[in-house]
Length: 93
Image 1 (tube, helix red, strand yellow):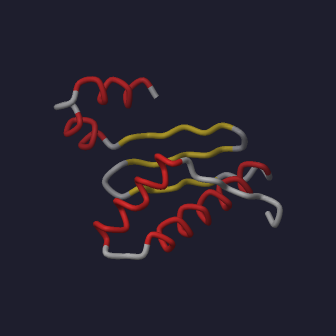
Image 2 (spheres, rainbow, N blue to C red):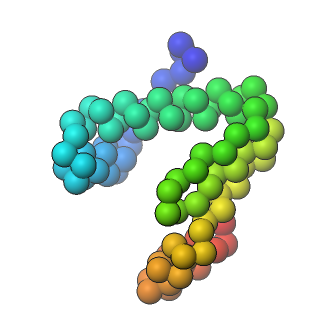
């Protein structure tokens, strides 16, 4: 993982800045947490590990070998259904 470098796009950087403001945390902390999580994910996927990332109130990212799928919680999908386009996009994944 030493040579693995994760760069964030300008849009990602803006999202991190917004999250930092909402959580009253430094943006660098948010970026560090995201990059660390992505490094773990990259390592696990490249070594064929089975793992799940649980996102409270959102869903579960299920990783089995080289197969990855996001399972969204039904309550979230219903809540998001107010925005029909986004709900359809979530359900198609």
